[in-house]
Structure formats: C-alpha cells, structure tokens
Amino acid sequence: MVSTAESFLIGGAAACTAVTVSNPFEVAKVRLQLQGELAKGGGEKVYKNVGDVLVKTWRHEGVSGIQRGLFPAYVYQILLNGSRLGFYEPLRRAINRTFGYTSADQIAATSIAAGASSGVVGGYILVRAGTGTMAGNPFFLIKARMQAYNPVLPVGTQHYYKHSWDALRSVWQAERWRGLIRGMDAAIIRTAMGSSVQLPSYIWTKRTIVENGWGKADSTWTFFASSAVSGACVCMVMQPADTALTRMYNQPTRALPNGKMVGVLYSNPIDCLWKTLKTEGPLGWYKGTTAHFLRIAPHTIVTLTANDLYLGWYRMASGTSEGVTRGS
Image (cartoon, rainbow, N blue to C red; front, side, top):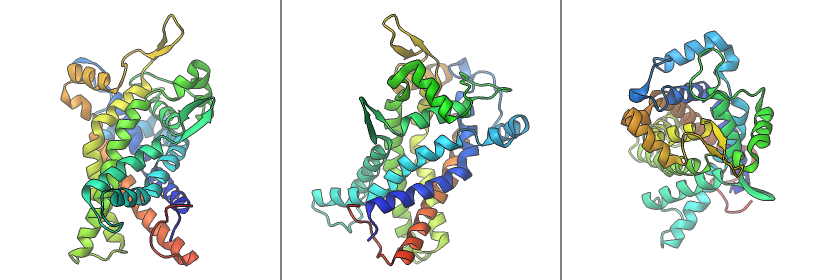
C-alpha cells in the first residue's frame, strides 16, 4: 500500500510535469479573461483568440513571456494537486464508510464529495504564523499577476515584479496578511468546483473503458482518454469561477480611512460575477474558455497519466501493492 504522504509527493511531481506543458495556455487564458474587463460589450480586443495571444506573447516577450509565473505555478501545484491526488482515496473511503458503503464501492455522490473535499484541503493547508493563512493562495495570486503583466500589450491592471520572491515581498509590504489571502473566497469556489468532478469523472471514465473492453487498465490510451474526459468536465464546471478568481486576484486595491486595503473593482467573487454579467453579458464569464480547455486538457491528461505512471513505477521499485493507506 502506498501511504498518503507518498501519494502526495507523487501527485505533486505529476502536477509539476503537467504545469510545464500547460503554463503557456494559462498565460493566454489569464490575458483573455482580463481583456475588456467591465467594458460594455466586452470592450476593445487586444487579442483575437488564444493563438493570437501566444504568437504576440512569443514575438514581444519570448520564452520568458510564454512561461510567466512558472515557479509559483510549481509551488501551487505541489500544494494543491499533491493534496488533491494524495487525499482523495482516503477521503472517499471514509465518506463511503460513513454512509454504509464499502471502501471499494464507487458511488458518484461520495466520489464528488471526496473530490471537492480533497481540493479544499489542497487549497487550504494552513501555515500558522501569528495569523492563519492559506499556503497555496499567495502563490496562485502572484502567478496570476505575473502572467497578466505585459510591457507591450497590457490588459487589465498591471503588476510588475522582478521575480516570485519580489512579488511576495511587495504584496506583504503593501497589505500584509490580507494581501496574501486576497481572493481566497473565490479560490474556495473554484477549487471545490474543479475538484468535485476531476477525479470522479476520471475514475468513472477509466472504469467504463476497462469494463467494456475498450482498453486495459494500465494502457497509456486508457489514461489519455480518461484524462481528456476529466479535463472537459472540469473546464465546463469551473470556467465562471475561474474568471472571477483571475479578476479578484488582479484587481487594483486602495486604502480605506482606517488603513484597510480593499479591492477597487470587486468586493467578493459573487460581486465580480454580477458586475461582469451586467457589463459584458454572460459571455464575459466565459472569456478565455478555449485557452482554459487547451490549458486544462493537457494539464489534466499529463497530471493524471503521470500520476498513474509514477505510482506504477514507484510500486515496482518499492514492491508495494496497489492502493493508498490512510496514514503516512
């Protein structure tokens, strides 16, 4: 049996492999989501589509522009997907037992609950340092701001940072803990929605393929097909919340008379979604959807395929049996 701690590390390694491939599409998605922000009808278009973003970014910024925010993306993926993949099975089995099912039963409702719970665990690992703060949120925040920054074709509010540590230091100096956890409420919604369908849809698809004889459980084709379906499900469910999160992270801030720093454009993710709907229409929620799918499909495929492959290699190397233990 592979321990939860070992599964966490393997899941983190798989996620880092994936984000290296998918990060350029994440850059494109962020810039498309911020294009024409709160402008009537969607505003003037700097970028026509995801391909146009990638071409212009490469032309003006090179590989450093295409891979903006890669380091904080690594850190965030280890925290989020390490937990999401590492804690999913223990949570699913515990929830199954709570409702009278066996650990081996694959129940849609309990799988979704476990997926959402494992995602929230990943997003909300707390670091105690006087005040509780989310370990992953500061890295996702600076990643979004770094990816939005473009010195040639800017969209949205521009935040210039020399590197990741300069970004964290700047946010801390300006807003202290409140800055580091900015957008945390939007992150809850986004993470829970995405996690609720990622692993359940992957496991359901994989089991369907195997049970119908369309592929073997350990074949690369089965991994890819299951991951592609999972990626499409995540994209459909998570897109509005993802747009709100990007805008909450990137919005400018101002100080109130009492010194409290607040967002200039939005007070919370629901306010963001409502204002976007009023000014840009329902399509405003779905800006960057193609880029999001092109980001999330390979990311999900590589993450889940690599996770299965890495687990298999680890089991062969260590002589452990299939499964995940509840403790480390």
